[in-house]
Amino acid sequence: MMGASMTFRGIDANYTLIMESLNLKWWDRDGREIKDIFSFFRLKGFECFRVRIWVGDIGPSRLLYASEIIRRACENGFRIQPTLFLSDRWADLYKQPEPDGWAVTSFQDKLKLIKAYVSNVMDKLAPFEDKCLYYQIGNEIDYGLCGIFANDKKRRKDLRWLREKVWRKEAEILKESVKVIREEHRSSKPIALHLGKWWNYPLLNSFLSAMDEFKVEYEILCVSFYPTGIGANFDELRKVKDITREHGKALSIAEYAYPSDLMKGQFWFMSKPVEGYPLTPEGQASWIRDFIAECRSLGIYASFYWSPELYLTKDHRGRFPEPKDMPLTFGWGPMSFFDEHGRAKPCVNSLR
Image (cartoon, rainbow, N blue to C red; front, side):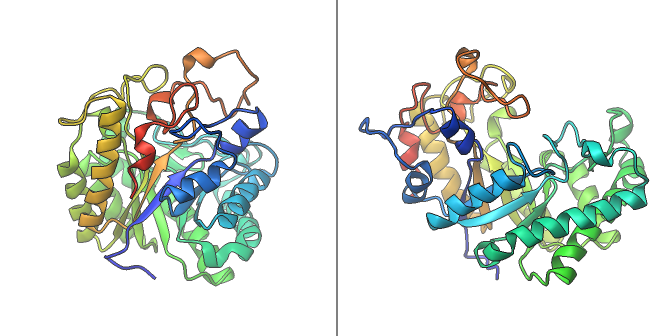
């Protein structure tokens, strides 16, 4: 099922269907239009597709949208990595909103809703079970999950407070979800949890210890690794690997990316270059190539490049309609595998 020698090259390209619906195009290095972006990414070396699943049936990243992503990915030879956000919108290090319809319930009622929801998702995913690499529950759940969240930035520095007031209930949510996957649906696939603040080693260790104490069953810890947020080199990744090993867990990279230029917009702060890797198309290509080699060397189970398809910048804003709950022009362009005109950068050849 899992082995130290395995390192899956993954992709998180969940904007593709929205971009296709807006008639946005991609071109290869020779200027030829890419007819099927799923096929293009598969041929370039990506092996597994991380699928974002929000609560609800209709709309971006909801179940029908995610199901189409899964169908297209599997048709092109990808394995899949379903990620259940347990939210009906973005949930991450800075927020963990519960679905609107769940906000008025007691905690025990919420657990029942979570159980029913996870069971429904698993029913939909059943035909693709053999294609699944592992299931991820939650997204960047350092400070909470599904409406249980440490909003007070000062208070959450107290790790004992986090353990008792947030992680204890969070563990109940995770255990209920795991129970549905393992017992009700009899899946033997690994289960992963995902943290965003990997560089805070006391927080990382405390979270893992709390999950052990609260008896949450999972096999993989995932982290988001955006090195230009703090200018981190690969030594930091080795430290995270050591910590997860001490807790008996495998390590995956749920999200990673490296920019080819200074970032502008929402993620402006991700502009601190790593030594030896300038913020240029060539520097981006070199970093990605070396990162994948480092993942193999460390025995990291899988790594997923986040949104390589999304080449739009702030300058594209207003040129076409964007879904309110899934905007496209927040400034991800420098992280993309394509320039602002949709033409492939050198990094498309960095995976092999």
